[in-house]
Image (cartoon, rainbow, N blue to C red; front, side, top):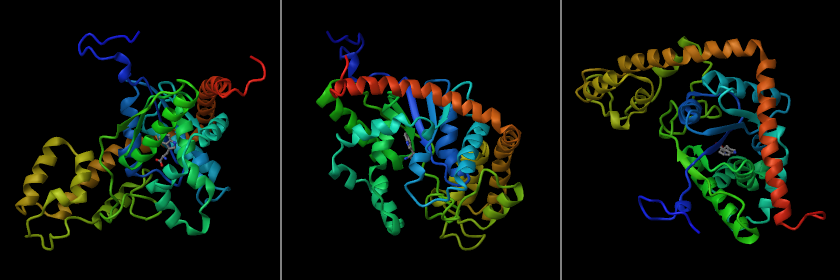
Length: 344
Ligand code: TRP
């Protein structure tokens, strides 16, 4: 019998509370402030509330061209920067995707309950295949199926991501529903927990921040590099002269102030920009100092961690072993639901 919620009278099961969350980050180059604001700082914020599983998704990264010689460094470096930002392996589970190869077995099973049509509608696939026309491989096409296996292997029921992942998460739920319908109730329908930081635009003010576009500020940039990059960054395009009033609502520098600056300064800039009381040069200088103040302690933790990479490696291994046993348990259940057991 369905348990009733005393307040609403509705079935409690209709929307189970999120308890375990999963998210992944690609080991592609250096982590920039867009990754930090959009993903990592949010992941850190959620640690006290949930059983948090965070993964460096190297099997996803190989769907586009990359340098195998650089990869081991990129994987470890992404994990180290994550730890420096506050992904404390004592308080959350941090691991590398390829250390739990069982996930790819689950992805194979999920391939059989995923429709080609749904995959063809994925905008990220369309974008990536137009960007990488020389290498439109089947892995790029089934990328979201592996993502579903990432989340559902340990039966996570919440996924913190940016809005660009909402379509992938909808597919994850569809895969869970299809599997449950065909083979019996096995997987949760994971909820999307949107990051509070809106999409972080690059310094060109035109595109999402990314290293490949060269419009980023790296979490490793020195203070002077940050000052310099911000000094030439794009602001309100209609503000041509210092004496013109500006419009913070369309200014990317102002949106970065919202993430890095204290409340009273944000209010001051909001008013003074509109009345031409403050110019872009000063506004950018304030942003640079606030950004540097937030990033410097992270950089110093990063430098401490880099000196002892074996400690970080051990933490990643023990993270992987926790997830491995969860995924093995799920696969046992899956194989028996599929009728693939010769002994019962
Ligand atoms: N596709 C995600 C991105 O590009 C990364 C990712 C892989 C992920 N597996 C995941 C995110 C599972 C959330 C859950 O950002």
